[in-house]
Image 1 (cartoon, rainbow, N blue to C red):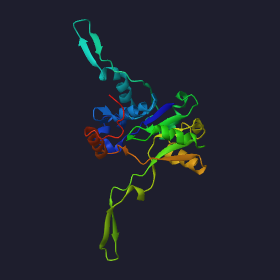
Image 2 (cartoon, rainbow, N blue to C red):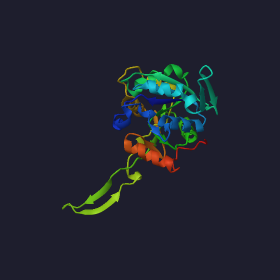
Image 3 (cartoon, one colour):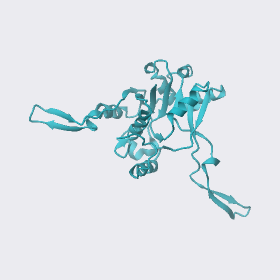
Image 4 (cartoon, rainbow, N blue to C red):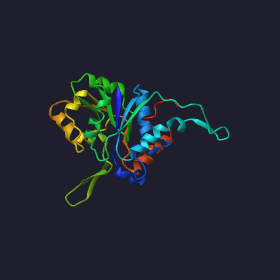
Amino acid sequence: MKVVILAGGFGTRISEESHLKPKPMIEIGDNPILWHIMKYYSHFGFNDFIICCGYKGYKIKEYFANYYYQHSDVTFDFSEDNKVIVHNKAKEPWKVTVVDTGLNTQTGGRIKRVQKYLDNEPFMLTYGDGVSDVNFEELLKFHKESNNIVTMTAIQPGSKFGVLDLDERGDVLRFEEKSKEDGGWINAGFMVVEPEIFYYLDENPKLNFEHMTLRSLAKEGKLGAYKHYGFWQCMDTLRDKLHLEALLEENEAPWVVWED
């Protein structure tokens, strides 16, 4: 089963770094968050990736074009006609197709533009800026037992703010941190998608997958949600990036399940 990763957005909320590179190429530790996402999928046996590029997509192409050298020890012998010797050769079981899906194209249009690479089969779909410890085996089982065209992973992010209970005069009666269970469910990505989705899509660059396509599926009863109670974190802001890096540095990153 192939994995489609949406990696074409501008990343305006983390402009401190995204003015130089697309958001999926921003590093968590020594590797882009895109690499972390792919390593996690690969842990479950998903190794065929299609990356939907847009903003600064050439940076993603350059990364994979040079991946072999970046992750290996290399000797450049200029005395021997510029001979290059690669030691400890890096190897991933990956096939990576990088597709330019347009600079300003919305998510629905991007997915439609990679249809020709999907062989009319179900596929995984996610965003290039979030990591999780969702169990893909359980997610896929949940999807197969339904009749849905799309199953998304749903999480409860909770509130970032404390909750005040006030009386009429404005005195605080109670102050508590809002628990996740008090919040609503949101789409965390990590979706399973049937090929019938393409009846709902076209290459209109303004077609938004979330606001238009998923809403249509929900109205038709063809959208499912796999509830995930574990870890999930997107990287929208510099604060998010620093949080993810701290987890990695402290060896407490729940998504790092692979062996080096």
